[in-house]
Amino acid sequence: MSLADALDRAADALPDLAEVIRPANGDAARVLEALDGEKAASVLAWMLAEAPDDAGELAAEWAGEEAGFAALSSIDEASLPKPGRKALRRVRHRLRSQGIVLPEAPAAPKVATLPEVEPDVEGAFVSPLDPGGSRAIVIVQANPSGGARIFELVANDWLGIQSCDVFKASRGKAKRFLREATQVGSGAGVMIEVDAARVMVARAAERQPKDRALPRSFSEWRSQIAAAPEGVSLPGDEAAAAFPETDAEDRARLLEMIEQNQIGPWPPLEEPLKETVDRLNEARDAKVVVAGGTQGRFEEILEDAAEAAYDEAFSACTAARFEESAYLFWKLSREPEARACLAGARSFREGEARSNPVARALLGRLLAPLMQEKEEEESESLLVKP
Image 1: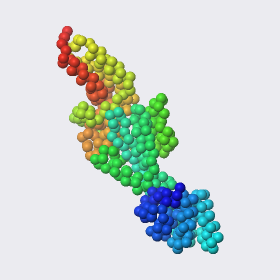
Image 2: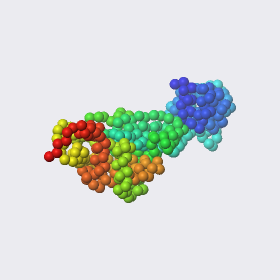
Image 3: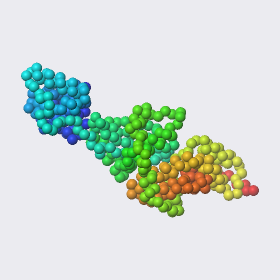
Image 4: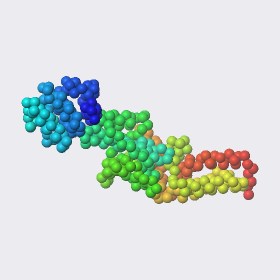
């Protein structure tokens, strides 16, 4: 790595000094001219810790200037990792051979060490659920060696971790990323607690299908993004506590949202749906329509499908999805939609799936194209009543 590249990395890791470092375009003398003594010492300390070979070149160029000599003199060798200490000793030796002796201990009471990582660089947000039940979960963490890491995951509580990407960024860019991604109207998502995000990631990972391996990057960073202390409150829990009561009007609003494709349908596994499709095909192929018309037959098939698809596990998953959606609506100041989602969550937690109109509405949305086709065929056929 060149000195210019190392200085560019220093600008990423020290965002408060980036506007001073970058205009110099890797020119060590220009960097020194733009920095006061303390800031110059911070840059040199970072370089010695993270890019010791290039730091030696920088120190050699700075040593002949008063400000550079002061920065070198203020570095506490004990605060550096081993490669940095070796680089600093090489610089001292080279200077001694020229008749210049740096003090072995800091000349000033204030020692230049690596800057502490700001705690507020950390954050997380979650996006709305897509029709398949997946959403983006983003976790931003401070990097102990400077800057931040951004973890972008696509997670599904029924299908596991679908992707995991890891990026490095300066602290300033990471903060800006969080701020812009969660601005009202951006559509990206809303802020959540970092530990809550980790729990959500861990819950999705537990559902990973046996025939599909977890993404390699997820496995590598799992301890960082899928571990949290016990007792963490999830976003859905907070929404449920904020709106402890819902009514029939809220449920009616949810049914309308489902019909208008504003939420769901979050399909179950294929097997129950395959059986339902087979039954619908049989109904279509039958040339006799019973009294009550095709719609009555469809309703019966949907009730049976709801009972088969929404077992205890999938009902709990669907309830949690509605609660999470309620949190997002709530934080976006859309209280009616939040209450509607909580009404849906409670319908799955408190009642049987067969008699749950929300379960039938979700399945109806999934099967809508096929049902519409059958209704069109019925309107063109001769109805025979018993």
